[in-house]
Length: 257
Image (cartoon, rainbow, N blue to C red; front, side):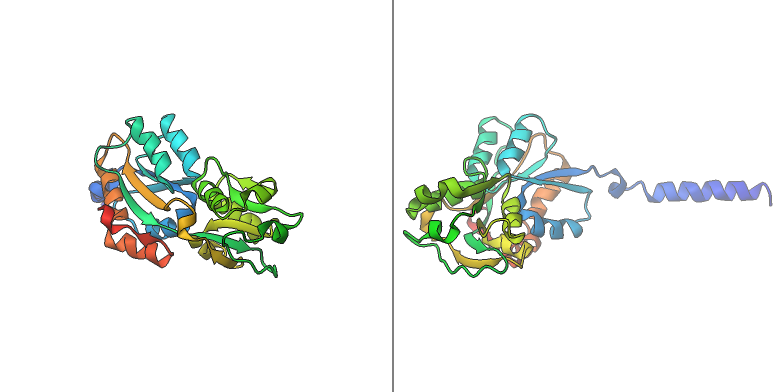
């Protein structure tokens, strides 16, 4: 028995190793760079994704695109606007024919918890008076998509000049949302989908779609492509993913497929 026991332990250990050796063990981790406004929906999708390990890096699309240009190991990029995807495309970093416009969104004016402000985005609306001596929370207006869209909308509605000195700019849209949720800014401009991440803030109104560029979220593969990265890309385009995105308020741009 003393000789058989070590052999049994060795055979058991070998069986465990063999059981762990299929594709699940060999699958490489995939790194997805994604706009911060997608965090709630993508976190849910990631929890249900079992094909390979998936790591998601969130941030402003501008910062993520710059990191990819500098060699960051992203394999899939999901941006909150087309301009930053254009930059990577022009640099030859995208896999040919992989770029599509996946999702759409709306821009929202929100108020802090406990705020009594009643204001709806419309031509000439008195945003400056509503702010008083306080600030308007927005993502970076010259770099981050939500900030770019927000500035476009305020210019279009004729109120940018009266509030530009009152804007508190943040690195990404979720940071702007937090400023309002914490009451550090009475008002903010975020995506409509961000409200689900902070239910304590109050929606004042949606900006007219004609007041800013269409909000589109393009997705693309970054060269070189691995089978695992291709699988993540396909998953983001699947009916399962679209249902999750829709539940979080994103519109589906099916015509892009």
